Structures are given as C-alpha cells and as structure tokens.
Image 1 (cartoon, rainbow over the protein chains, first blue to last red):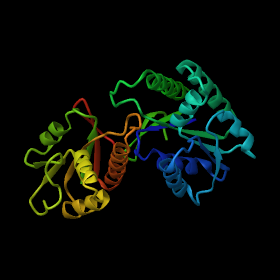
Image 2: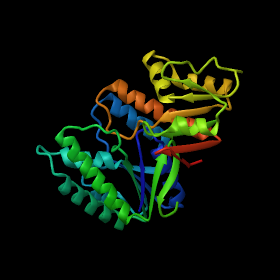
Image 3: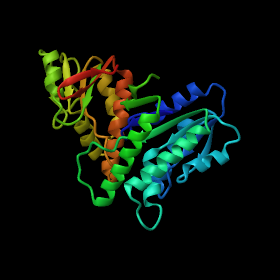
Image 4: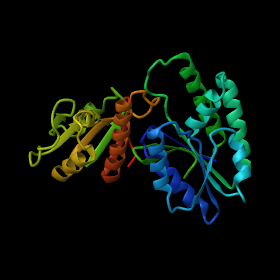
Length: 177
Length: 126
C-alpha cells in the first residue's frame, strides 16, 4: 500500500494518478471515487478530476461507503487508486442518522481497507491533511478529525510507502517511491 | 525563481532575508508585486495575501502570476501554506484556498529551488 497525504489543492491527486499509472504496468487500473455529490461545486470538482484522469485508462468505481465491496466490481486484481480517505471517513461517520464514534469508524475503515488491499495488486490511498488550521471546531467535527487522524496513522503503519505532497512535490515520509 | 513555503509564523522571511541580505522585500499584504520590473532583486513576501486581495477584487490571479514571473523571472516568493485544514463553509474562503494551492503548485513546478520552512529551519524539497 502507498499512502499519499496532502492539503487541499496540494497536487496530491495528480501525483497519485502518476504513481498509479507508473505502478500499473499494464494491469487493470481502478479509480475508487468516494465523494458524494450534493451540489454544483461538488459536480465541478468531480468533473475536474475526471478531466485529469481522462484517457489514462482508469475504470471508475463509485464507492462512497463500504469500500471493500468495490472488490466485487473488479473483474481481475489490479492497481487501485482510492480518492479520498477524507470523504470515505465522513461518509461512514455521518452517513446514518446517528453519528458514529471515531473509534468505530476508524476500526471499520481500516479493516475494510486492509481487506481491499488483500484483493488488489497495488493499492494507493489518497488522504487529506486537514489537521493544521488550529481551529477548535464543534464536537462532531473534532470527532471526525480524530477518526481521520487515526485512520491515517494506522494505514501509515501498514503502508510500505508514505509520501506527503507539498505544492505538487512528493516528499517521502516512509519507504521509497 | 525560488519558492519558500511553510505555516504561519515559521520564520520564513527572516530565513530568506538572512540568505539574501541585499534584496528588497515587497509585502503582498499591502504592496503590489506587478510593475516592479527592472528594479533589481525582489523578495515577494505574503504571496497568499496578495492572491487573496486580487481574488477579492475579482481578478484573474493566474494571469497576474504569469505577468509577475515574466517581469521578474529571478524573484523569490514566500507564501504561507493554507490548505492543511477542514474545508471552509464559506465559498470565498474555499476559493482562496483552492487558488492559492494551485498557484503554489505552478510556482513550485517553475521554481529552480523550493524550500519548506518549519521552526525557522528550511527543508529543500526541490
């Protein structure tokens, strides 16, 4: 597993795609889209990402929750690019009427990602650095930050490679690219 | 062009001024970057605040950055990293983060040297 972290508009998506294509070497390429679209801005964001991926051979699977179920959509094991962990964690946490706890969400997501990883040749996970604005948010947002932070730490333990993308430049934090 | 980025209050300006003591600093919070052509070596500080001012004025920041680099190809640009937080509720704030991030990616690609500064310590990342 390769974990790629970066802030908003840090160039993490473009770098993750390059990595997936470079690692793919003729294997099927799957793009796991976790973002749920609610409005025009969300649509524009998804459209921008689709344009960036166009012609690069990715088969897109929309999987906003229950991420391991995406394995059912893959005809054969391949290189999988999951974008973005921040959306997946939010969807798992706030998807039902009652908000789930950070521990429950982190356990579920990490277990499912490890299962997904087992079924793929190479898994590349994009996650978001949302932790450094110093703002004290409401209790439910702080719970969300704890869940995403825990997921990032636990995936980084398992991943062979962790890279932080800063202004489009990958900086390796663990392993090698 | 060289790019120096980092969080708020990380000693970026002091770091760069120590490295280039003779260069003049222009403050993007209130001064203009464009129109400084041919006036010697310049450090453009607070790039993110300069982006913010021009976005608020409804201007095309991408074009402004292009003309800045055309006039000052060997300048130094300093910017806060502002994208490492929860997505803001306000759409103008989101646009500010998005545009600043994209411009920093472009600048980093064109730069001959990029450093990230934490606690006044530079880490060369390009």
